Amino acid sequence: MSTARRGETCSRRARAARILFFFLCALGIELYGFSALLRNFTWNNDRSLWEDAVAKSPHKARPYDALGVALASVGRLQEAEQSLKRAIHLAPRGGQAYINLGYVYSLQGKSEEALAAYEMAIPLCPRLLSEIYNNMGLIYFRQERMEEAEKTLWKSIESRPHHAPPYCNLGAYYEKKGDIDRAILYYEITVKLAPDYYLAYGALTVLYEQKGWKEKSREAYQKFLSGALR
Image 1: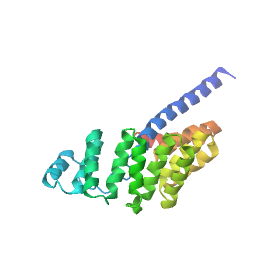
Image 2: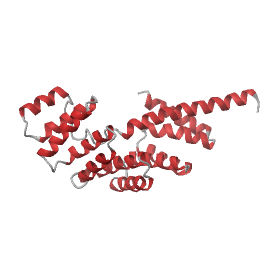
Image 3: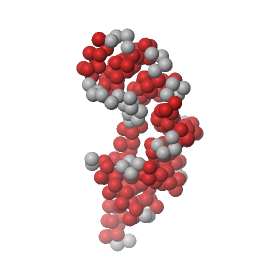
Image 4: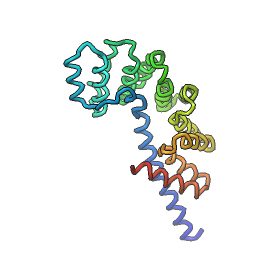
């Protein structure tokens, strides 16, 4: 192989390695992404506002729920956990607080507690089943409980067939198993459903490179960058 060819190959590999690194960093954020967390909170998510609301309405669940979200968003996780538990105590049938608590538990590395919170949310939040199952699937994935991860991600898709995140996570599942063709299939479904889902483009950049599909890899790389740099 000529020096120029070797240099080009090394450059491609270095580019793929950089993309993989940034993709994995972004995926780590996505694993704990807010998903359904902020779905029901369309007002200003200001911590001081909700602290005031809690002080004025100490027997209402919703201010505690919103305060928990606000505290989690600034990394005050133990306080967020306590606020969300208070919301659940005041309104045990309020499923959104269980979802938010599952998220906070995930951030704390309390996987089993997070799974239990999501299980509690399932019968209470039928409209959010796709998000709940997706989040549970990701926890199983991180625990390397691979059969449970796959099964739960499919439940997410069955609940909402046009919801992109579980397809992306199935792509990651098959990529981890070494099934590149299936991984590509699910990443491509992801970007078809959500053309701005840059995480999937990051994965496709690497996998297309591995398949030797240079032009497709370059196109995916450009789309990845356009999303990641927004």
